[in-house]
Image 1 (cartoon, each protein chain N blue to C red):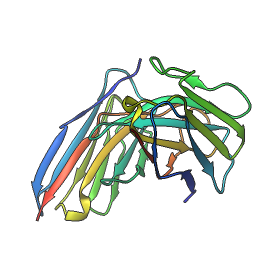
Image 2: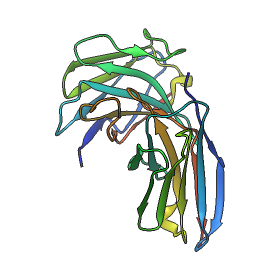
Image 3: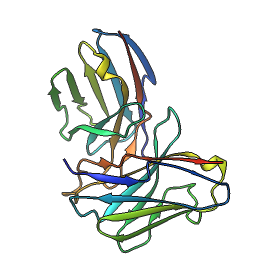
Image 4: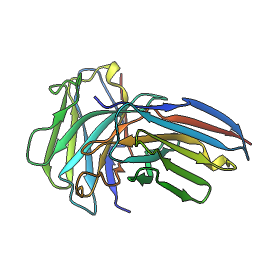
Length: 119
Length: 108
């Protein structure tokens, strides 16, 4: 199956600093990628939809100035957590899919996830 | 907005017992996908259902899409320790909204 690579897998940063997470689709072009956040023992919460060449679409309650998304190419989307605080500590995970056929979603391929700890 | 609820939230079973998780929506779904996330891992696609009343099988796993396309189920026959993980359903035409998930523990 298709491969989505996410980097880094773990990061520890100091409060107030910014952290960039990369998500790459390795063997297909992804015009759209998705960023999720997952707290322990909870579901994946969709944060935003990353659109290649245009602004990301953020879900309600997600601060766009806090979580900067850039999708500069068809194979790379980045999520930057700016001025991170301990409450931003979480598991961040991206996904991408080959182009949708009609109105039916295709299989989503997930990155390995990034465990962010802000100290 | 669209909400997908899953029940139960947790399930502990003895190895060899069957397990079922249910996914329910208040609105008609265009499709349903099921994913499995192992502890510490990322979600992995299991299957997609599109047609009303559709039933698909993968070895010990049976997936069903309701006639009204508002609910779905995943049934595992004779669970094994390798079935441990969280099972999520998701649906959407453009973006993937995940259900609340069912965490399965299998006791050897």
